[in-house]
Length: 316
Image (cartoon, rainbow, N blue to C red):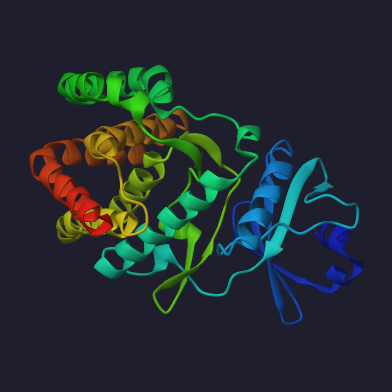
């Protein structure tokens, strides 16, 4: 690893390296701290590098990728691709109480500001398109249907009618732009309750902006789903999350209408993903989340409607 790090400068040969998780290392060079990450390919690194620099220049709390001595924002080492960026001091969002109204509003408003910035990025067309509806319909739905039928003796026919009947037409009208696509609490760094860093832009795509907000909502629920008290808190969290987002960039009525079906699509993708990996325990957890959210829809719909109506009132 020393040989790899020296590609960013000979001084990195003296750095101390410690693993954080699979494919991620902490690099300590004197008083400076960096994060080294393994990447599957180099294909999107240049686009990410340019985007992160642009976001940084426009005041977003981003840590750009660092250039190597060879003039690239990545290094090749033993057939692997690696990137390096400065560590952002603070506490990851998945280590704080994510169910508080304060966190919900801060995370929501941070995402909205990021979306406004991403919507202004002129090179957006260089990123691939991500269509969550088509992804769920072609990849996730068949696998989840088969798993649910085997597990419960029946399929998800009611849910299929909700998604197919309520989202097909509104989906095409949903606002599209560059989205983060992995906006969960662990990718937020906080100090004194404020977001000071947003991490992991390697999954940025052109897609429906509502995806990021719904993804964040389901990620928070997943973190405490086994706790009945946290499930109750999540119902309030959702209202505050939408309010936080709307305080910066109000959702449209179409997004309000599509919010729950979008959550369902995201859960379907997670279930299918874990089934594909053979992780049936995690697949079953996400299936339980999907069914629980669906059972709460009569309560959730007016909560979402009031939150969106309230932010529109503030914007006028």
